[in-house]
Image 1 (tube, helix red, strand yellow):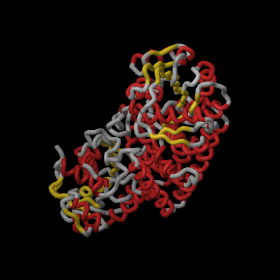
Image 2 (image 1 turned 90 degrees about the vertical axis):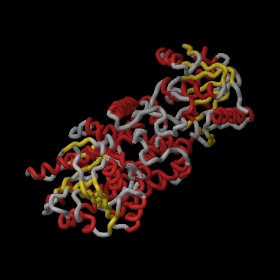
Image 3 (image 1 turned 180 degrees about the horizontal axis):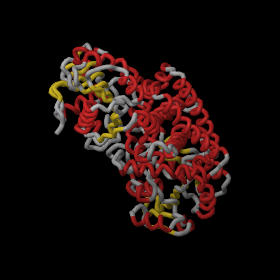
Amino acid sequence: MNEKFSKAAIIGVGLIGSSLARALREAGLAETIIGFDQSADVRARAVGCGAVDAAVQTLKEALGGADLIVVSTPVGAVAEILAGVAKEAEPGALVVDVGSVKGAVVNAAAAISTRAFIVPCHPVAGTEQSGPEAGFAALFRDRWSIITPLPRQDEEYLAAVARAAGVWRAVGAHVEIMDHEHHDLALAITSHLPHLIAFTLVGAADDLESVTEAEIVKYSAGGFRDFTRIAASDPVMWRDVFLNNKAAILEVLGRFSEELALLQRAIRWGDADTLESVFARGRTLRRAIVAAGQEKDVPNFGRDEKD
Amino acid sequence: MNEKFSKAAIIGVGLIGSSLARALREAGLAETIIGFDQSADVRARAVGCGAVDAAVQTLKEALGGADLIVVSTPVGAVAEILAGVAKEAEPGALVVDVGSVKGAVVNAAAAISTRAFIVPCHPVAGTEQSGPEAGFAALFRDRWSIITPLPRQDEEYLAAVARAAGVWRAVGAHVEIMDHEHHDLALAITSHLPHLIAFTLVGAADDLESVTEAEIVKYSAGGFRDFTRIAASDPVMWRDVFLNNKAAILEVLGRFSEELALLQRAIRWGDADTLESVFARGRTLRRAIVAAGQEKDVPNFGRDEKD
């Protein structure tokens, strides 16, 4: 039996916030869904595209009467928003965030005194689009949402964690609970480093004066286009991720650079065996991802339906 | 008016060879399509799945009477195959290869004396699948096929280049003609480096003992899965690409590493402006790729249709 909320306040109605708003409505989890966003333009668009019932200009208005509060801003803004939420939220309100980095959020939340319950969450889902129009209710379906609880063991708080898990399950996600350090390392390798590398590749291509952008576009089917999808992700969101998960990202980046140096050396010296054995590992992981339903796998994947 | 061939010989019936065989049949370009492959298993499968009309055990049998010869083996085998083709091919036969590296092919072909016409080609198309069953006729549709002619200007040879262009157009591809040095640099950035990086990332993830493979699979929707598609590509084919395009790959890899070092430093020192400005470049290129029809672009791209 899913918990029903009378008012959900969505703080930041971009891709993730507006998707969760739509998913809450579709699942019948909230009677009213109110958006708050710093930008008047975004507020108007969020209402215009039907993501939220109304959008308000102050955090106070958004939080008044809200029993579910979703903080879906870039990670860099979460600490400040949570400080404001702590003051204005109704006692007992459930507060979840959706940030891709959890250490920074847990540390900020643990330092705050509030009668609401802050449950740090990270739904591992997204697209390269941004803005309220880009959201869709099914974004979280069959994806994983990770909860990294605050370091407290009181019964009320544990119940709030269970309520948060219930919200994610109600919108179609699977739930995993882990500590924030492990989250930040696991996501550094599965999400943050891939984005960093994709941004780097696009930058390197952009700087290559002897190959034109038109050529890069034409021949992108050779592999490049697979990187451009994630390199088109929101720059501000990603800037905040890298600023807030520095240690874990530098750790996995160091490992990546070592592996790359190994392959560079193998190319330079014509070491066929090393190349082939490293390359052979890719298929195993790909098959596991496809088998787990985290990706479809058809011969013409990524091509037009007519193909 | 498309040229019709009486017999097409497909030397190597993997993903690309079997796709071209199917495309030739679909376009009515060849009366008979014969496959040759070193592996008896692959020969049997190529006939079994209907990619070719028959498969033969020797190059000589394959080439006898063939007026179109397609060399679709890994690049490392092309020089040796071309030497055999030069001896056995009918005078005037059109010989195209499909290798992802062209300098090595052009140099090998230019050193061979033959009465057939060798036209080095590279259709920029593929999937992460391999084997004759993975091929499909539409693989080349709306993709680019690059021709890097041998350094000869005689009329007969130029006519052969035009015939090769006609074959690619007849199977739905666009054709570009360029010199092999430029091809190898352009593809190093658009295809070879992306594959190298994807293989490297998968290797680095595999080596991270504190994050399990199950976790990598679960959270791959965070970005990692975009890399695994190309990291699942054929290891032998890619080994050969890296061994045969060393200079261009090391050049673009050097630029990639410089860009990565810049971002690493920005992360270490918390340089928000550098991160945001580098990240912002990704969207421009992505939009150009989508606009050129080299990728579809929907909010739920890569997810199941039901989403």
